[in-house]
Length: 57
Image (cartoon, rainbow, N blue to C red):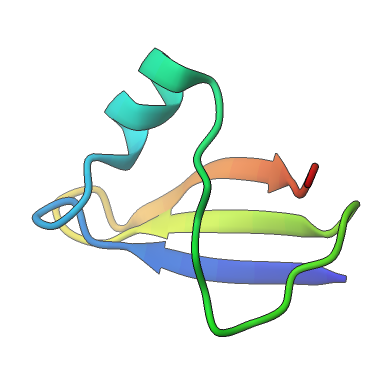
């Protein structure tokens, strides 16, 4: 399954978290499954998809 989720950089520094940790444990109401592809769309100021991720666990 493919998903797209938003990231508000005023609340969470997504790029910095991935750069520092290499992964993010992203809690959502949606039940992602291992192997799902999740695109992360950053709101202002970028306004674009910044990551393509694969659910690992």
